[in-house]
Amino acid sequence: MKSYKWYGKNFQGAFTSGEIEAFSYKLAKFYLSQQKIKCHFVMRKMNFFIKTSITSFEIALFLKQLALLINSGIPLVQACIIISKLEKKLLLKNIISAIKNEIELGKNLSLCLTKFPKYFDSLSCYMIELGEQSGLLDKMLFMVSNYKEKTLTMQKKFQQALIYPGVTIISALFIIIFMLIVVVPRFEDLFSNMHSRLPFATLCIIHLSHFLRNSFFLLLIPPIMLVLIWHYGKRTFSIKNVKDKFFLFIPYFGTTYKKILLSRFSSSLAATFSAGVPILESLPLVSKTIDNFVFQKEILQLQNQIAFGISLHTAMERLSFFPPLFASMIKVGEETGKLDLMLEKISTIYEIDIDNCFNHFNKLLEPLIILILGVLIGGVVIAMYLPIFKLGTFI
Image (cartoon, rainbow, N blue to C red; front, side):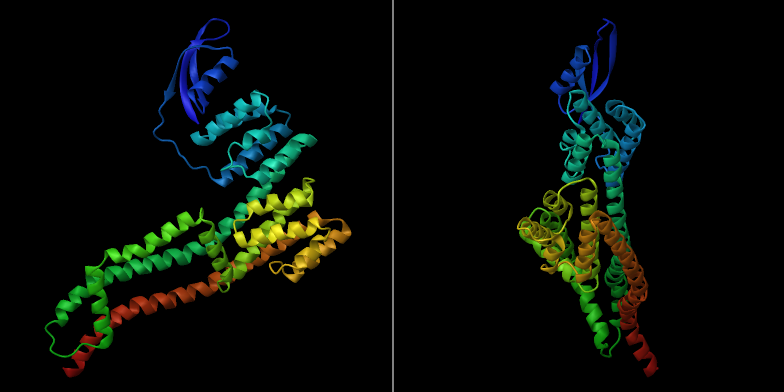
């Protein structure tokens, strides 16, 4: 989306000017002609301070605001105009304006949203399309927004659980590298006048200090390689497949990660069932919301078995990814005719279990990190003071 300044005459013949957002110069002129404005010139406005990122929480908030305005009886185009005026982030404002312009040309909201796949996934667009067809657009927007918020809350908890150990370990590594490059050489100068043999631990630390000072660039290779693998792994099937399998088989972490995937699967499937989507259409849509190739394959196998007439809980029992309790609760939901409610209950149970895992993980992690830091930093300090202690025994 680009911003264009324009100057011309309106349908009454009066001179007027303003700004308009469009993907191209031709589209900007077309949108103005739709408003019966005869342009004298249209010039692109240069924006040097555009915030290019839009968070998923902002997308969820936009959908909820849209649902509230539609529920209040405000037409869709007018609702987009109101939200666009209130929005401060220019990129999101431009997207909302583009959606509004497309709706004015007679297109459905769901079709407009599909033009921004980076921000609106296929499941959300499909559910909004069902809302348009059934005349329950506001309720469907509420449902999609709540589903997004629930998913994002779980992701945020997962990220927060990793921030503390990650920051602590990286800080400790920087402190150790600083000690090896700056502090250890001072001790080495002090020990150079000693005629006795240095302890083995001290020699190891001094040799490591020499290696870092002479080949510091080698330290940059591992983080650069990790960043490249992480970046290109999102696009390369083989790397992503290995990475996804690795995450699932890490002790303790892999079990919690699997529970997060099952919780997201349950909430996504519950949302599609509540919207009236048939199960054979729901599963491919739900698989696209799961960012793990291993689980995606399991969901597609689930779909293939159901296509042959097998019930959902029986298909789950045949697949290793779904725990027995999960399949048992699905069976109860199918027998009672309340599968969507059972899926929501399963998702809630997993969320509580995941919260407990995170709390337990943090309690275990704090003493473990203190122990690791004590061994690493304390080991360097003790190794440097061993010759001084040895010298003291001779005195």
